[in-house]
Length: 178
Image: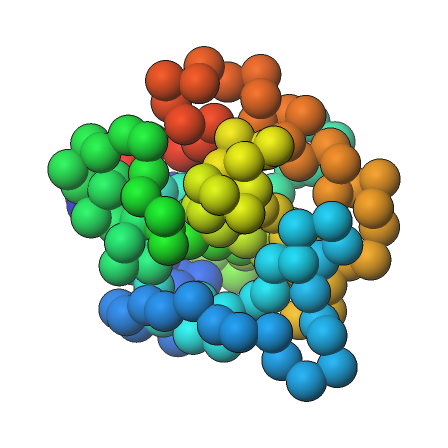
């Protein structure tokens, strides 16, 4: 991946700060049941070490920057253009507030540098065509500060939004950035 834009460089800086590495595996639910409602998705303990699928800036009311990571199964599918994704693929979306960097902008002499601010949440999508047949084969979870968001209404919006995508895209927003 070529890091050319200020957004990409800011996200790259976030990787350094947050210590991303390569690797992947799905987890079993931790003691205490920290799983999303409806789907039962858990936060995989090693998701931060997964490989980068892409980065994004979401404007509007969210105004965040995101990195999309994939476990080994998801990464192989992205690289090989395999759709639908195979069971066991997991995609993680990490988001941070999108903030101007006063320090960097002072050095550059103009406002051009944006960086990851405070984290907002982590979203996890797990492919299991049998378990999640009613939601296009995907189960969803959202986590704030490592804790599953308990809101059933929130979880009901996941597939409602993803289902607006063509089924041929396997209900996945992200495409692989080379």
